[in-house]
Length: 317
Image (cartoon, rainbow, N blue to C red):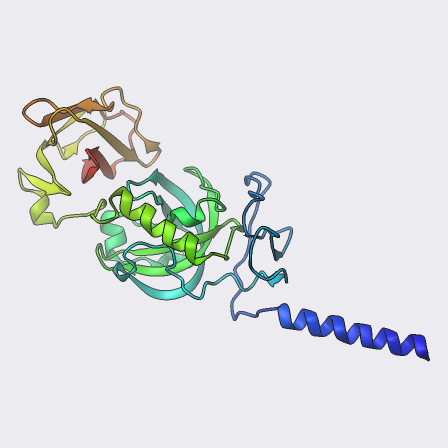
């Protein structure tokens, strides 16, 4: 009888401790970690994988050492670490979606920008601005604070993303921003210090300007447009595959300007798209051949000079 009593007390004690440490959430995201996913960075504070459905806090963290259930991947402040959070209107503080990556780029504000073609069951999560400016894709942003834990995918990869589902009020399109899990890898944990550092990183990298600003159709037909201090002088907006496109901007004399053209297949590697020095009059030009097999569509052109950025659209027919 004495041994049985001790066993019951021990069982009740364990159940009590586990019950106190488990946090429930109405909707748990699915995890699709594959063998191709990069390994977790072991220096992070909280880690989860599909094979290990419990997130354990590292001894390096000042947080509790109790395990946290995988279902509690939401953040009490979903926009923590985002600079100028007022530009993002939270539709859902926790959303999981899946799709195929069409564009990946590292932006001047140090976010990793991912254009994700959503799987059919999530098609209603985008709006007309996503169709007009983001090729019908939802925008996924991995902010500096989360880049230590979240693996950045490659074009063509099928991924599952968890983060805050928001409307970007500056541009009008829908985003998962920030995304703190990709394919089950990431961290729901953050500290106030890390969030503050993330905000400062974004601001120091031109977070105070609209580096992805899109002008209205009427403005875009003008012979001269500007964004963040750069002026568009001329641009062959419409081109056929196999023909040449060219663009001239006015920037800061003596600086080095860069250009990137993103097609459906990814960044263009055309020989004419190398960094160029802005001449003494402040002008710089690029000319490149659009490949004969380039997919027709509206493709973004990104130009940076002296810490400023300009976005235009190349229409391939």
